[in-house]
Length: 586
Image (tube, rainbow, N blue to C red; front, top):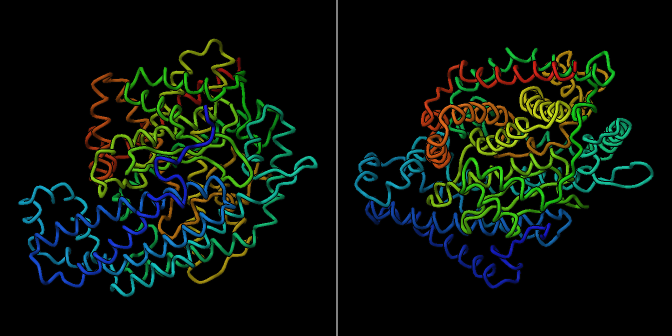
């Protein structure tokens, strides 16, 4: 089995005739789009809408292929100069679409009979949600020339600052035991079975941030100021309002989510303190012990063993999911192991034009790595369920983006706990699941608090590294309470988390809490309903690109604005914390 992904289905290289031809086709479509935008008054509204649909489909396909290829290559090797160059060139081409798209969007929004035109034309009915969103977004769209300028300046502005953060965190050298290693490798040692290694790795990680903290602080400050200024120009009250608008999610839903989470924070603090005492600490759990394994589940998995395990497991839930997992391994969708220059963490990229996904992970063979891979394969399954959607209808919003991935985690963890051969293994599995739960409840809340404060401060001040560290520590203290030792927190979590570094996506934190609790509620329904749940689940995933978050949930008879729904998932975690306490006592 090849442990590096294969991108040949997209292109074989930048000299591939397919790549060269697609760049030419993109240039051609940009000219056609500009011509259309200039001549809208010369055609009927219906013919204009049909031509708009055709050109948007062509451009969405070409841009996704071209950008996917270059960005995947650079993710695998951030030192790839050629890929960085092509990403810049493609961004410039994409920015030239902004002006005609703005003209066209305003044209669509001003059509008084838009609904009538859509309902009377089969081809337009397919993209009804997309067209209606254009109409609803019109009040936030600026003059076409301003939109074009914003798009072009973002290439050397926000996008460039984001690239800097990615480059620095992937290439910074970490000094560890007299040798040099990568940040992703040193962070993976937090899962070591050796207490001294966990502490030494934590110290080495914090020390390495001193090398890059100033540059990354400039990245964060400039990205957030750009977002603030753009929000003001567009008429949003705040970046949070913009995020919720773009996510097609009500503020009432977010409020219900956080109210439920705050109510249950003390229960998670209790878990952390119990773990701390079990490991010999009396003042709360040290930060560097959060991922310390407990119990006895030291089995290491090869990639082949991981494939067999996941395929057999998912067969019992959804045969097509198992088949897709088999394909992902056999057809080299996955880049497994950490290496110099490769970005840290894990992600899944859907590539709609080839109806496949590609997954990057930093696999070390632990069970937690198997769970991470199952998570990313959940994203791939989400992409699989929308593969037959029109290419215009393939973008799902942040909150529902974590649904299938976290659902997969529930499948694998519940199955593993149920089949645990003894209490030692069960303790290991339960504690592992609570580690993840604490991340989506406590850590995600701290990230939300941090980002909110950064936006608040950045309106009229620049934050140097020391201030950013203080904001992060304050957020962690509030989110983790007395569950963690306040003297051993991680002030530099703002440096290594790429989610903060985007002008187009702010607050990419609460969707993890949303996804975790939403998926847990869906899993409870699966346990109640059995096989009849699967068609409903697949319908829900497919609908995430053409419905609001609240309407998607209604497919499974869920009201997201009701705090009681979110409490269902939190109550199930509370029961697991009680089970954890019992197992620790044994």
